Length: 114
Length: 114
Image 1 (tube, rainbow over the protein chains, first blue to last red):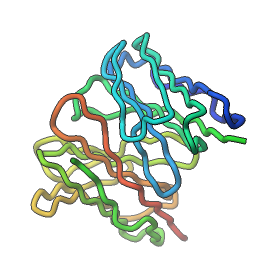
Image 2 (spheres, each protein chain N blue to C red):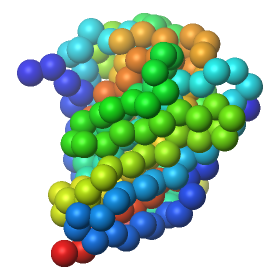
Image 3 (cartoon, chains in turn yellow, green):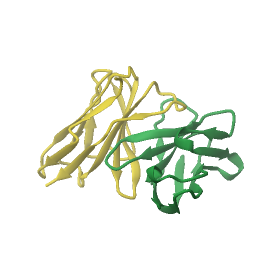
């Protein structure tokens, strides 16, 4: 079945370590997004990519990095520079950079810093 | 800059009662508007969207929303709540230009009691 796969579902990280969250889609979508979700804060945009080898910062990009080497994949690295990384991370994709198309979401990765 | 305000972080209704979740937006251009639902520890699922045309939009699970430009609102309603409707609901907006990502409200948690 087509969809978006995020892995792992739960991730624990020690302070000072970088960690990479995986996001893969087989929907043939051009655009992909990373959001961070905190209780009572809604979803905040970290990075988005409209096409392979191109990406833009969202509202809260500091302490995060991404790559888009393949159309299907948009991994997110949470670096040690991110002050408060514990959160629920959601990856999404859409057919293109057209605002009137829906975004499809993965099941999320819950990151906890220990 | 576009933004979304969801009035009421928590709404409680009885089973069979009317559901009304409020969403107001600000946008400098005609917006594209979305409602998503999220169950615990899951990704988001699209309920409905408004792009152009008819201002009353019908979605899945009996939900509908009406775009009111004069009030800059896109409230979500359902005539009769069901226990399975208990979840968190997010309103989102995207401006009518290519290359933008969705901007989300902070969410409204809907509780349904028997």
